[in-house]
Structure formats: C-alpha cells, structure tokens
Image (cartoon, rainbow, N blue to C red; front, side, top):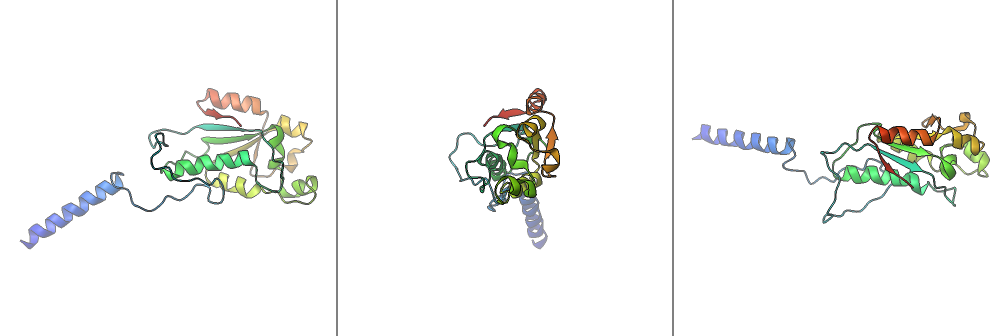
Length: 186
C-alpha cells in the first residue's frame, strides 16, 4: 500500500513538473519587465491580439521625433521600451539584436554622450542615457544615422559608446526590412 502511494506521489510530481516545464501550467508570478524603469504598460487580460511565443520578433523602430523638453527621455525611444515590456509581459524575449532602434532627424541629439549633451543643452544631463543602457541590456541594438549626425553638427566622438553609428538611416531601414524586420515608424 505504501509503495503504491509513493508511486502515485512520484507520478503526480512528474506530471506537475512536466506541465510546468512545458508551459501548460504557468506560475502566478508576474513577469519581469525587460526595461524596468521605462515604457510603462498596463494589463489587458481581454485583449484580442497578444504577443506570441511562436513568433520571432524582428522589428526596427524609426525614431525621428525630438522632445520639446530636453530634460525628459525621448517619447519615441520610450516607445521601444514599451514594446519590449509588452512582449516580456507575455513571456516573449526577442533574440538579442532582433529589435533595432534607429535615431535620425530631430531625435539625433538623444544619442550624445553626457558631456556633449550638457554643452548643447545648457548644462542639462542627457536623460536618454539610462534608457539606452536598459534597452541595450534588454537586447535592443541602438543606432544613429551618420548623415543625421553631420546635419546636426554632432561629431561621431560625441556619440555615447553604447550607440552604433550607421552610414545612413535610409540604408539601415531598407537593409533590415529586406532581411525580414517589421518597420515601426514614428
């Protein structure tokens, strides 16, 4: 009798382990945001369309909008954080580098290192650097257009080291879309 009880307990434990490890049963622990301090989201349990674990999210954001208030993080760059947090809320973590944010146009100055930003913005610290850091930790590739840098009179040496400089947003956006990335414009 005791042996039968032990066998049932072992079978139940194995079934529970299998259900949890295959995702049939999900823990009630809320998922950790991909970008903890930016990109706030709210729950939408009745949403018809949700992130899917069966998809590979290859996405490029064209970030062109500047901020009127240069002491706050860029709203368009924060949209990238929101996207990452929406995916994370449903347990989706894109492959590192599959999500790309390309700065150009009026958004170009947000990639400046703190010293250069302070010089350009009357001593104000660059409020985008922590956001860029957290996006990078979440696997987002952060880029800037060298043509936009030249147009904004920003030397390549003034770009924060976490940001890659591409020859042009035009070519980056075209190349990535041709490689299967979905474009999310500003």
